[in-house]
Length: 425
Ligand SMILES: Nc1nc2c(c(=O)[nH]1)N[C@H]1C(S)=C(S)[C@@H](COP(=O)(O)OP(=O)(O)OC[C@H]3O[C@@H](n4cnc5c(N)ncnc54)[C@H](O)[C@@H]3O)O[C@H]1N2
Ligand code: MOO
Ligand SMILES: [Mg+2]
Image (cartoon, rainbow, N blue to C red):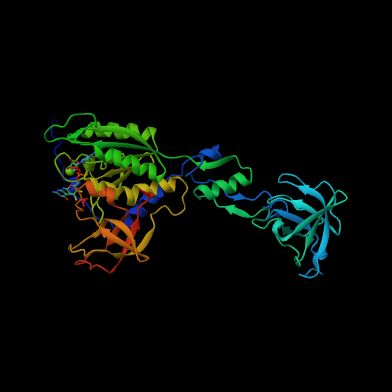
């Protein structure tokens, strides 16, 4: 293969901090277009509009129990020794309203969730009554005072008409589904999932079906990135891998940027002879945002803009590729999808084992989370090198080790970044 001789340019790098790098990207994040989709397909999507309640909820006074709708005043004289008999004049199943007025001294049999007759003001539970039939009429006996409002859910108990229920930017999960369905919102306006083109650079890369050969490895980064894109809410577009060839990479990037919302590559961003991405982002029609971040892993993470679209060139080292995505690409995808705070949550945890490494840069250490006696513990992976792939699968979070630390002792508090994905098994 023809060698890509490096110019001096890609050695010339100024490191920016993680937060500076994140801020440099923000102006170039374009919100996705809005689309209207059936509610049933909206799980996980981000609402693109505020939703206010079109009517109060509940919409009618609703019985909390199976029992009898009554006038509470009829029970004022009730006690253990003094009972009141009420005539049952109606039966109200769910989905119906009463068919006859319920007068004083009368009651209507009612089911949980049914419409409480307007003239009644309380529901007494079935178990608190006895009944008798006389001359073909049914009567119930009460021996306790029932206060007004007992077992009746008032109109608007949960929500008033016109109340802001869900703000734009909110993710639709089970609870939001329930609210939207309650108000008959069968189609919702959500942000379109950004399409994220993924391709890997590296002459050493094999496709998954290829047999192994000495010096070659399979392209695992693209598959890892596809999962990360999905978790962030985007739609991964797999564009395979290309060899380390600047012209080829350039063509591929241009095509992908034209067709898709975002492009993510892995590999070739350092200073090696075949590290073409460093040169690619320095070409005239590309605006490089940063090509070095004061962090490990992922120090070589690079971001650029071409034709108004973002290109992220992540490290080929799997650990650095993973972290670079979580800190920069994931937030960009979530922001495109209208998420108000797109960054992963920062929590505090107790460090589970000593962390002995000397550290000059901010380091993001993969770790497992564990709850011990109600406390959150972060247990660093035993091998955490940038080039190590296997412990990525064991990380629920990244421990943020500040720069200039000599090591941290078990039991000390550490800042962690909680990774997405609810691993349940
Ligand atoms: N002289 C220097 N060497 C290196 C520096 C440096 O500053 N000076 N930085 C190191 C750091 S830090 C990192 S991180 C890596 C970055 O490497 P690249 O982004 O240029 O990636 P490659 O050289 O293409 O590959 C590195 C490594 O990753 C493997 N790889 C690549 N693509 C994939 C893939 N799709 N799936 C799985 N694994 C992949 C590749 O085979 C290499 O082993 O540079 C250091 N060097
Ligand atoms: O970008 Mo490199 O990880 O710092 O290992
Ligand atoms: Mg390299």
